[in-house]
Image (cartoon, rainbow, N blue to C red; front, side):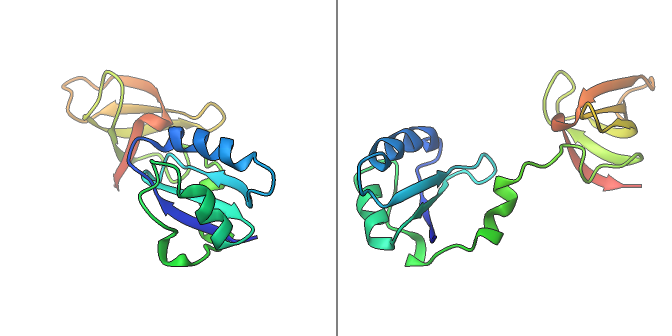
Length: 148
């Protein structure tokens, strides 16, 4: 089952998915599945019977900016990371310096003091603060900067 990559207009991936669903539900469309990932903005992956039928169905969608990239298929192993969800605490450890990317403490740097993998929460102490107060936040709100 070949998978083809298409460029999509940024921010219009969900509209593209709705249009592709309408076209893919037609009998003998040749399109079996569509993958749009939050981590790869501007790209969509389409699984179909062959390149010609997939491009024929995707050509009429305005959000698609062109033909399948290089007319080549993408091995499933290359996009497996987009399909299998990862834990937000994966790759984080106690003592790691992180940058808070969302919430009331946005853009501040902190050090991880405790982790709760089951709840996907971490306890951090702000580096930019005069007082060392432990703050419990969700692991999605931080980005790894360095390890000490």
